Image (spheres, helix red, strand yellow):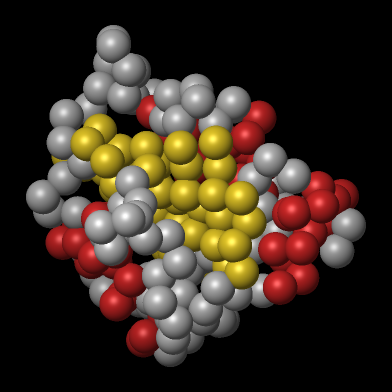
Length: 189
């Protein structure tokens, strides 16, 4: 895949990326060919991405050599980002789009440092009538991200139909602890 064919970052991610301070440590989960990795790299962040797709990881490694691109099966293998104490490494932001693996949710939340921002967007129930994914395993239940993030500060939440391409999504931005990020709070919009 050439660089020109890579999709633009999700508008949801770009809309709330200002909550992630420059020079933050960002984890791009199931990051594919790096559309969000590149976005945060341009914001002077340190970026780590993990994906099962070897071609995608090789593409990122060649195009964005400062991104730590890790090929791993995060559904059937061990979590590849563990610290010396055996706990998930901490990040200032975790970004996930178009991906759902429910058993990984606790690990993703545990990967957020205090003040860390979760930006999550994926398909939800109702999408089965519009196309793929259509299996319940890959579709969020109504309000599911609100439940997952119930102990965090919710910055934004949306659930519903998007038209280009037609799909049903659920998306959330939440903060682990106080919404500060830097010495002065960021405006939300």
